[in-house]
Length: 83
Picture 1: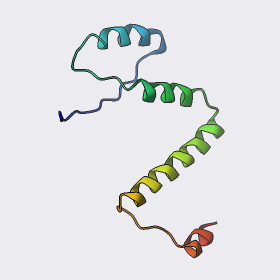
Picture 2 (picture 1 turned 135 degrees about the vertical axis):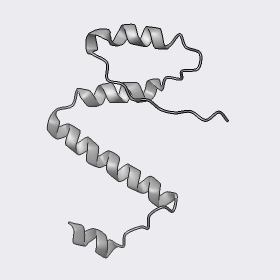
Picture 3 (picture 1 turned 180 degrees about the vertical axis):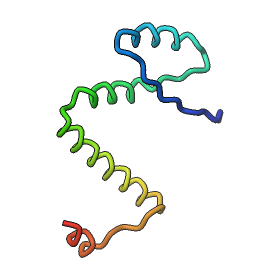
Picture 4 (picture 1 turned 180 degrees about the horizontal axis):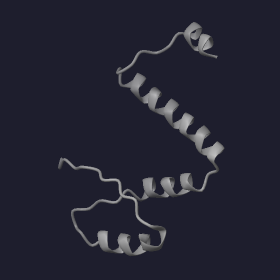
């Protein structure tokens, strides 16, 4: 499998469509349309909703790390003491 790097760019709204048309012409560029759509939706959230969404994503990342064995699960006592 070919190893790839990820690049995050900030493009002005008025130049976005043009940039995407250009970048799609490079055969070595793979665009994650699903992730792009999610990022667009996140930008539309209010500040408070964006904060809540960030916490949800943080929790999902923690679950993935637990499943991969990178961090250990918390006991019910540890969980409740955090509340």
